[in-house]
Image: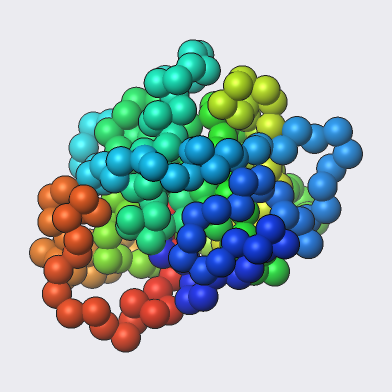
Length: 245
Ligand code: NI
């Protein structure tokens, strides 16, 4: 997903704005921690020192096929996740899936505020999302964007709560519950790992609008962005851009 809202919420861990710190996710104010749920833990070692990688764009085959399950919870996986945190931060994103850095592997990272502006930082391998049904299901129609299709946003209605289950970097089961932007992020990143981009969920007409916006702004994003920075003037919109995933 795209950029975070202006001014990072400060978590109880004291994480400041543009830093990627907060070693543990589920700094819950809203969604209460479920008893017995294993919560993803993120070491400082994962959120610092990574290499910024080019972000893969829509149209590249790895973006449009289901990724392989993570089976090896080894140092190679930690290195990939460290690089994904660095890349997400460089692109001012709130979520990033491994196929967005060209890797065919079912793992995503997030650094994303929830509905109460509490920041959550974490990683999930082999995610499966569970969405509310029946009376519990409320759709939230908000703008959504994607780091792999930079510069374009379109309204997409998604359930306003999500539960994402998977594994941490040691293979231990984890569960992340989210509302607000975090609910959207969990759904968007899990979609990526299943080979679905959010444009696939839009009407033909909305998709066309999205493409026109993208075509307009795409020249500002070098092919290896965010390794090379975006070009052109910073515009006022940057301040309150909706988050990219
Ligand atoms: Ni995306």
